[in-house]
Image 1: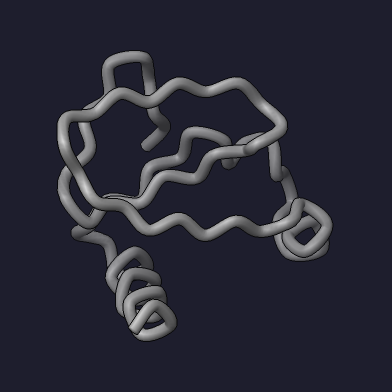
Image 2: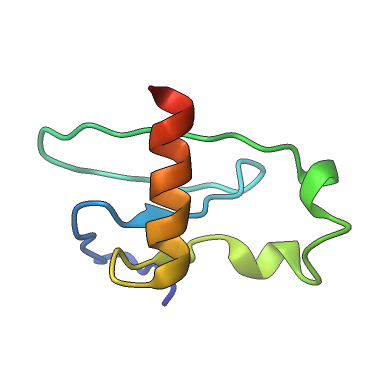
Length: 76
């Protein structure tokens, strides 16, 4: 799923944003955890980096559950 101008995110969802591209986020009070990775690090691993911008990883997917668990472990 890709973010549109009116996308709503469920708690614990993840969004991939390309910091070289313009984006705008609005939200009521919330807490977030950000992970910033250089494009050069991802380039050898991802065929089309530009296609990732705005991609939403729903909280219900196994990949996002694993990512959230790993990020929480790094944060703690």
